[in-house]
Length: 126
Image 1 (cartoon, rainbow, N blue to C red):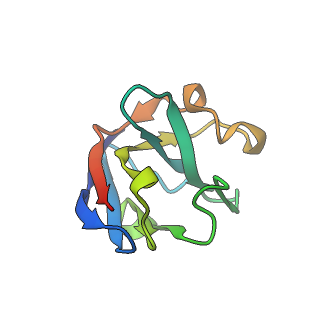
Image 2 (tube, rainbow, N blue to C red):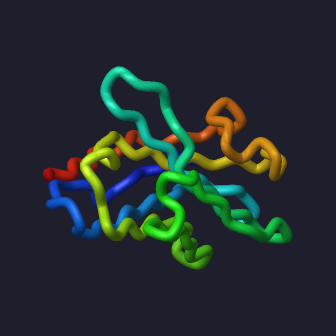
Image 3 (spheres, one colour):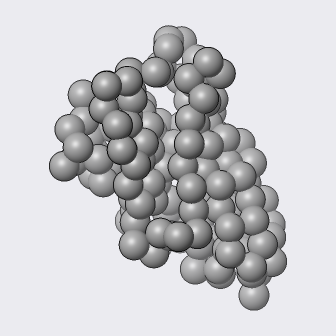
């Protein structure tokens, strides 16, 4: 499975962006899909995850809850991250990830995802 993330850019605080992650090389319907982000000099942090077939549920980091929404379109093999009310502290490279084996309690752990996209830069100016 190959993943490619799109949609990053420069936006003012309070603005919105929608990230897309397109999968190829296989159908990712059964996969848990997630977004992580990494700011300069910091670790890669969990942002959000969405379950695959038969594994429902979405989860969010506390820092983005109520502002970000994750969704997926299995027919397009794509997962989205709608980001509203952006803050300067949201500035980071955003990565999408996929796993067919991660369990619910491990969805926030980056090492549990074997497939990663290349990342897309999101910069929020104050």
